[in-house]
Image (cartoon, rainbow, N blue to C red; front, side, top):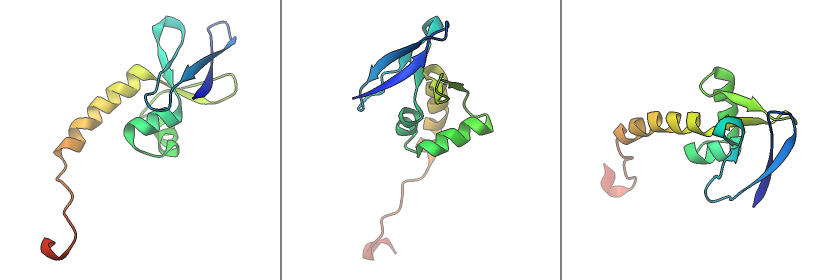
Length: 102
């Protein structure tokens, strides 16, 4: 179990516990939820550095914590995941390698 630190609208740091199996987003003002780069990366099955590159490219909006760490809005991440999921389903299945795959 890890602890992430988010900031409240008043700038005060608050702790929120998450479980490694299913990302439990930390609540913030307005009922929004935030995810860490590692949590987003796990959902997309990519490296956390890829998530950071997506943020720099404008594919995802990031929020900075008081410590300068990136956090991502859960709703925005889920919307992007829904856009990507149909694309992955349309890809052909990988070919089997071996003697009978010729």
